[in-house]
Image (tube, rainbow, N blue to C red; front, side):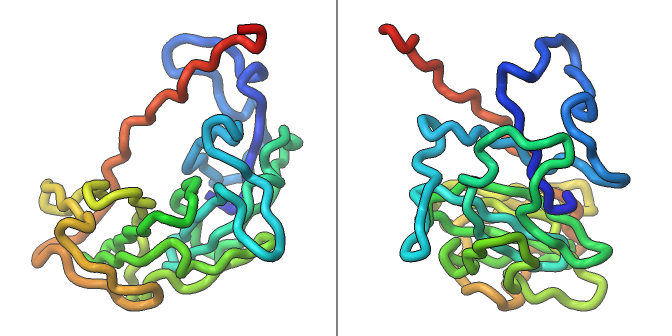
Length: 215
């Protein structure tokens, strides 16, 4: 949540039951820091990670912070195991935190929502690609006391960002219901009463099982 990526091999994660082992056994998290996303960076799962100054890699990362800023960045520097202190991928403003990180290919639509009842949809390629850790560019223009609560990198029209409302309901935002508005705007109002208070997390999908190297 503070813009740091921590990388470990699957084989180094201890087998356990129940809730698993504390993440602090592997990494040294800072005070108030929380894990916001977990990704496999195996090229067999996510695609080629290496790029160049002339073009994006086949797969890269996108992230956004609570103050409405977003950035795209390369994942290759994070593919190898890190130290316990991790490696920086973003520098959120003081008092703000990163919300999520997603692996994308450039064909996705970003669906972002704020607690002020608004949502914005834009092409992921509208978000600047940074060569180093930074704050990024304005993804969504927020009003006073408003903050971003989450985003989804949608691969198709039916991919949905499901939002919790302060009145106990849910609001679904996808390309079938809302049009692209472009990066940097205020988006559009998606509910009339109450506030948006959180994102309903998708159930993680297990990666495929690979055949043995000798097969």
